[in-house]
Length: 422
Image (tube, rainbow, N blue to C red; front, side):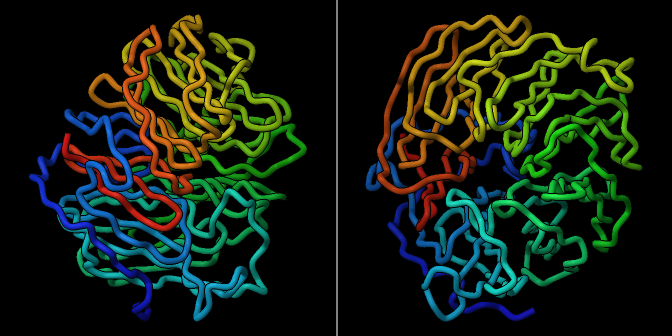
């Protein structure tokens, strides 16, 4: 595949700081997939020109979040071909940046997208919304119904790519992939015949495909699966319209399920803590379910394994996070809730941001929130609400934070920021 020379235009605000590597941020919501970082000393205050280590202009549009492996940062984007006009043909690609400086190391076009063949997307979506995933020197870039590819993370050379698993989406693509052993797995919750798909990560060939069955009339959703372990057995947790399923990741066989009637367009990634799985049920009115998961979970456990349910200020889009004994979620209207994870008791519900789509990041006893206008809020974790800082970027933001060393990565509609210096 050719390299797109115009794929990235860089404008750097020069600065330097020790990288202080903590952990790699290899997938959507970090190394655990649940929005928690072990980093200490992340910045609490920042702005467009405050505590900015560097900033990079990124062409096109992509609401995928950054991933970090070693001294590199990876991003995907959809870049109009030869024109910035809305609806132009696009190049779907991935780029690698040097974490210390923000300079481009390589950029690669993976798929060409013809405007005449592209279904309309939601105004809050992009043609590059799924976050890539890194493992063992390879980067897996997923563009939903438009194709999936594996590239060498060092050189950007294509190892394999496939467009064999297209489907008819509603509002575009969204969910990110997950790695389970030798498989790359993603949800394909289309308008009709929704499914979960597993590809061989070495070759891109189909290993299994399981039809999603539920009572929901609207079949489309955009969720990212989560791999958990219960009693030494791996389970693939995959929410879709009307149902969350646990599958055997090796075969796709269903282990258990919980139904939630007509919930659709499910976006938040599930979280697993304290033997409970936390799942949001999607549109029109979301609920937050706490589901007991044990070695005896089998079949339909909707009636037997629901520990508690929250129905007020539950997110449609941002994923939740668990810190200690508390679960935190931010509704799309910006209300932050702190809930006892085991009982569902609400400690507080406070308006914190403006309209939000980005998922919460938890690190060093703090919660990092980000709203759609670029306002970042930092809140002290705990059962009493304490706002530590409000930081305005004044740029549109729908991607979620990532962590590099002791710094934050923040993607806006036009730029990628590395924030640090506290």
